Image (cartoon, rainbow over all chains, first blue to last red):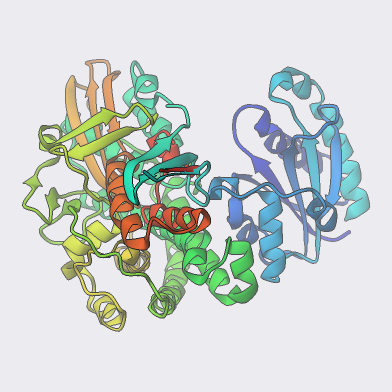
Length: 152
Length: 429
């Protein structure tokens, strides 16, 4: 098992808080369950933009948990490698506010500052179905935990 | 009659969303409208009825780039309302905290938004291929600013450490010692950034305009001072509304603030023009090597002004944090009383003026917030009128759009703050 930096991207309110909540749940599980051998350093970040590159600096194994909007059921966990994420059409960058995860990964790649291993777990959200998302919190956490055990 | 109409439907690489409409008749600009179409966010109304202590955290939410500025102007206003005198330690540490925001915001603007213009790239992603070391340096500087904010604020985005009277807690000496080492390294990066920018070919669009900034008797202004212009204005923050007025334009959701009905500039170039004599000797020596003579009337020198302020902020924060000690109390005691107060500080983008009325229970009865971008809007339109004529209105639509965006970006408008940027539409006749 390799030490992994887990970066949960979100904010304290609304449907975008799901990654932070999952980070908290993961932290509790890893502290409680001795039989899960994941050596993790978990941090929560609020709209980091390009600063994400600084957050993972010094770490070889990194996972990013972020909310995503996709044409899939809310609460679905989608696993992406950097290459897979790059296949999605980039949004046009109108402002630094729009400098999202995908653009940050592209910039990190150009600067040679991507971690050796980087996996992104995207949690499908919908602003209209926030309550439904909360009901799936345990399921989402367990699914990400399973991915973590396999990936790291 | 020949009419040309140019629309820039979305202004790229600025904070927030806006558009520009140009109507050109017989090679003269007939109409020029900088349209801010993001909806107003009614923060002043949210604040009414709230406890004074909530204000500092709520106003931090106005902007993800300059939350410290909103906090510091609000704190100053409420402290005036309650007749609170802050300690010398709080005063010094607030300057250090604010320096973090200047470093972070200016680094972001120079590298992510402005530099690609002067180097002929569409975005930082293209620029990073050819200038990876410079982009890495920019990210290091931005991170340094964020760390300085987090030292006092607990986190860099929407920090929570500031309160009326000072800070909830003083930073640990060990954390300050560690940051001092990084500030030392940051000074090397800031000098390299200035020398690199000095090699860029910046267009000359020098013009006569009014600039306004805080001015302090003994220091480069951040949190305090009188409002002074290059055309004789010299007033206190309490006299602001006697000279400045906000008006609503039908084509924009953001208010336009003018000085006696005329446009004016706020921001780094205004500050530098008014206060460069307070910069440390080392920085003045570096500036002497660059193609800029202060005071400057060339708006394209704004990028150099930002870099100069990055250097200053790192230098000054280092100065303030050397021999740091944690005080017994990180904030002054607060006694709630009915009152009103004014706050006016220098946000990265310029003057940020606030006014609060608080009742005997400490609840906000009235709030008025005038951010830098609403102050710069009329000035941006004035600059576009002048500079586009100089550029040549017969130019191709794409060239006009690119040049317009470049001009607007010089002001680093934070539309999210002012309500909130460029779609260009041009109609030619």
